Length: 230
Image 1 (spheres, rainbow, N blue to C red):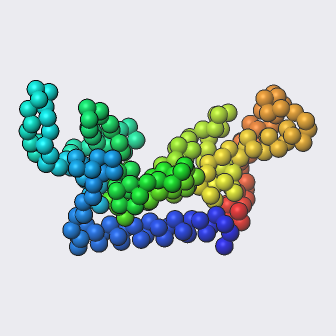
Image 2 (cartoon, rainbow, N blue to C red; image 1 turned 180 degrees about the vertical axis):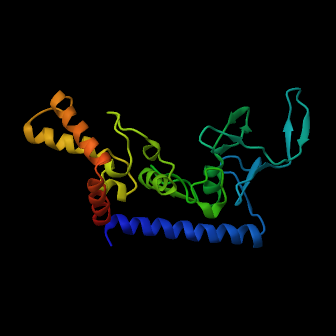
Image 3 (tube, rainbow, N blue to C red; image 1 turned 90 degrees about the vertical axis):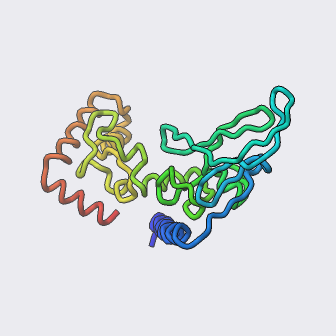
């Protein structure tokens, strides 16, 4: 088993354990609450990803002391599907993402350079078993596993070649990356001849390779074999 396969197996184990843990937590456990770091005495976050304010005494703008009743906060959803809540203290407001609040409260602060990983790929699932601190590289690999990475959504390469089957670089495809095989072949051909990729001769070569990879059934069979061997 090579290094990439070991990493994929490890992430799959993480997600399998996460699925089981989430099911157990939602079915058998009582929701646990903890103070939001930096907002102790004002807000709490649960291991299920809920955030609430707590009963507290304040002095309003007229100088009158009164009690604010605690309540469950309604999260906002950003363009990426991630949830955030509005927190306020000392006249200053903030909109931290819920996933960071959960991890900070129940796991601890993020190590330097780390970010949140959603192990099941659902940015709205902020249950503690679904979250962990991880590197940016780990997060990017998770996106490939969840089929949400922008590179996997591409239909054409920058040169207009369709990214499908025979025209996908076999070794990259095996690792869930979508790279234009025709362009890669043309770049190698150009380097061998001391040409630039923008040279018309090189672009013609790329176009010819693209037509071979897409139209020739024998080339498709060869591509399938290369994917299996990659």
